[in-house]
Length: 85
Image (tube, rainbow, N blue to C red; front, side, top):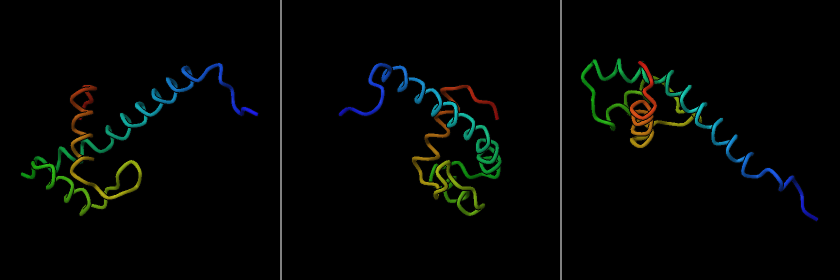
């Protein structure tokens, strides 16, 4: 027996991707001002930014510790989506 509704899988997947992107953009909007503040204090490396975010108690979108790739992804999202600081 098949479960679910196989008639709209592409549509459901597209809707899920769109929602994920919107959530990531909203999270980036909240974190980017903090990153900009850290950068103004002189810390510009990805590793330094991750350490500073962790020291400030800022959590990632999935409530984890910041790593270099998290910071890189947020900064990349800012550039590609033209998010404002």
